[in-house]
Image 1 (cartoon, rainbow, N blue to C red):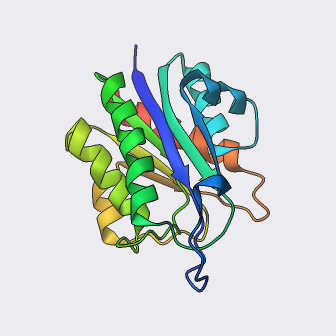
Image 2: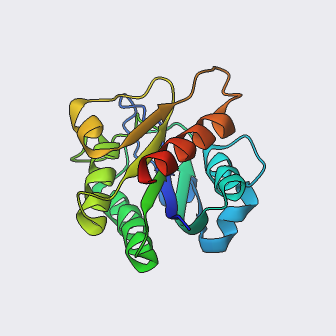
Amino acid sequence: MVHLIAGGIMHETHTFSAEPTPLEAWTVVRGADCDAYAGTNHSLGGGIDACRELDVRLSHTYFAQATSTGPVTRQLFDAMVGELVAGIEAALPADGVVLTLHGAMVAEDFLEAEVEIVRRVKAVVGPEMPVAVTLDLHANIGPELVEQATVIVGYDTYPHIDLNDRASEAVHLLVRAIR
């Protein structure tokens, strides 16, 4: 049976804002609490639903999201990514990782925060571990993210009525790559 690990950090940063996004702005769920997203039009829910459909074992770790606001401080970014990575490491061994991200997150010292998230995840799981990433349709996708991720799937619609479908697509592609 294929075993996937899921988690993520979603934030669309407005770099013109001088106010950093405070901790209080974030909704955080951990472990089994992530199951609350199943059956919803959310990327996390789409990943859960696809794993159930494919009879894939899924280990939830850490998921945080905040509405569109200013950059994330280095301290908060390191704390969130640290918890995500620690959760992923604790769930190993696995066959792959699914990350629910946004694609336009900026943190202090990291203009492409998603690249840094994937880089830190890959540092723990190893360079050969396949990683799928879901992103907003206006994500900033540079060559480093393409090099780090095995699968990148962006939303097709605005308003976002296809979040579940695109995350399901990402999981299907990841499982196909693993098999």
